[in-house]
Image 1 (tube, one colour):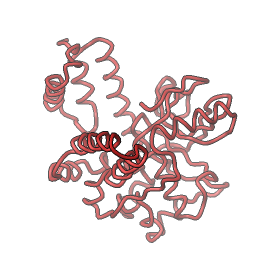
Image 2 (cartoon, rainbow, N blue to C red; image 1 turned 90 degrees about the vertical axis):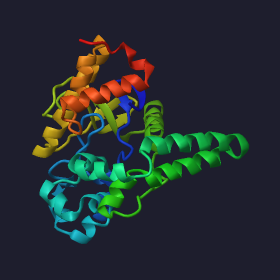
Image 3 (spheres, one colour; image 1 turned 30 degrees about the vertical axis):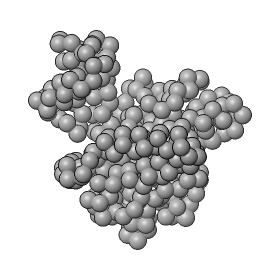
Image 4 (cartoon, one colour; image 1 turned 45 degrees about the vertical axis):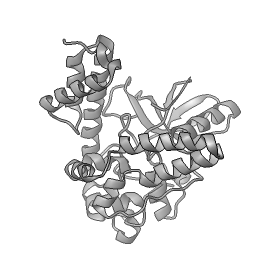
Length: 298
């Protein structure tokens, strides 16, 4: 997941496509730079969720933000989840968590779409590679990147009326941008704050020390040092533990070459939650991808 940087405890750099967008959005809405905040975005790989309180220079700004509807709906996550839902949650989730907090609505929207996200990206990449051969390669890549950013989670935004996606090209461009920022900080000893995947080691109390967690880290020549984070709200704790359980079943499936473990991994995931559906999905993937032939019965 992301680019590896196996030095001084840095396992990988990355997260969801929306990496870091949430923290910048709400901090901008409050007029406070993200670097001044002491917020944590703890999570299991692929799942991030802000703390119940956002501490900025000793003050707790989250209640103030949740009470201010215009400011709350001035950034992407506020429009996507809606002010009332965010107040119920008592947190500002990363946009990616909309899949988890409205799975039925999202599934219906995806089914109504003309093509899946995977189909769209496959066609887009093919067009991009063809254009690279006949015109400016950088221009072709930038065009494809901007289109991808603009259409990310389009079904969710249409479902909720959230409008166009915010896109700031001055920020790192996905996994590769984060990986380059890690390498620069390590090589030049330029301290920076990045959301990275590291060993838990007590950072997230709801998970064991060996779990890989996605949290803000200070990165310099000594490596990545996880920052202090606030406790997770109850709904965030349950979600992260469920996804981590699914991930560990994936590891068992890969290690043992077990279809049974793969089905359990899929069934344990909060967006599946059914043994029957999990078995159908695993068998469909095995039929489509010969690389999964190693998943045997048992």
